[in-house]
Image (cartoon, rainbow, N blue to C red):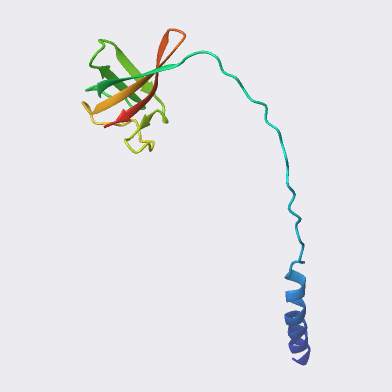
Length: 118
């Protein structure tokens, strides 16, 4: 019995020393890097059109009818639809919801940059 008490007391004294981590001091190092400037030539024109969400919305897609253009646009995948605060929202909108479509025109090609939900 005395042997158990002595061994428990020794373990109680030694265990904190075994599990205590050493006091390592980390030196902070400053890294300097130089970044070369990038020159982009060309022009990108952003235009905004008022549109609405189509009556039928398949899963994973947003179909947009542009009021000024007879074409239909399809946005697939997350990351293209934002609310008025600039936060990303899902592409599941109510049919007929009013949206603003921001188009990017570069080199004569008109593509959807992002969609703003009103």
